[in-house]
Amino acid sequence: MQGVFLAFFSAVVVCLLCGPFLISFLQRLKFGQHIRTDGPKAHLQKAGTPTMGGIIILLSLLIGVLITGELNSRIQLLLLATLAFGFIGFLDDFIKIVMKRPLGLKAREKILGQIIIAGIFTYVVLAYFGRGTEIMVPGLSLQIDLGWVYFPFAVFVLVGVANAVNLTDGLDGLASGITVFTLLAYLLITKAWGLTDVSVFCAALLGGCLGFLFFNLYPARIFMGDTGSLALGGAVGALAVLTKTELLLVILGGVYVLETLSVIMQVLYFKATKGNRLFLMSPLHHHFELKGWSEQRVVFTFWTVAAIFAVLAVKISV
Image (cartoon, rainbow, N blue to C red; front, side, top):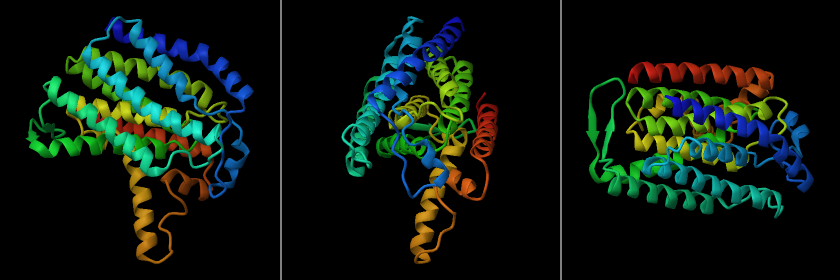
């Protein structure tokens, strides 16, 4: 338990200490966020806010884990997956900001990179960690063996979660706050299951997210960018695969699921009705903004829903 607390508090402190320096550095470089003109008009005032803040979270995670001395093969694998997804996000942010290409990496380039990382991660877990091809059914003492189907399934989970978190990252403090509840739930679950090393990883990443929230709450002084959102999504997906909780993640990351479903439903409805919209705008958080909710109200409401999902997931699992 001492390692968990040490990882958490170390990550929080590192984030709080490094945050002001990174914000100032990014401001000097003029690494400001580009705001899409087709989004809510209130967001236009955020143009120029420093982005790529996910770097702080990743640095806090690394130091939080290293300072505990807990660096076994499972933690190394989780770190590599998180950093690899974060690197794709970093490239995307770099192209948007430095190379002045607002859309960043092409969609197929981004997805292909994620599929490759997810495929390598899944192969390593299956070949060297004795993961097996079973998935656990939440709330039941039951495991289903997917056989060869598990490999594409796990890749889908990893890529899907990474992009779901990316979609959720649209308001100040939204994605980082929701991920705090997801990671807290994973921390409690892995600790109860005796996976102390995985708990240390969860604690360090949780500390990084909480520290980042200090700078990311409305009005945000820095955004995490794709560097942070893809890294967090990759980390959560990797945790799910490693702990056989892919199905539980539907509950544990319920807000991510709702945000993603809103985008899918919007597209399908738009095509089926030849131009009509199911939501005022997707992802779902923008719908409530355009309904007249303040940004803070949307964020705190979504945090509350995320907390309920997290409590439910822990209750089912522990």
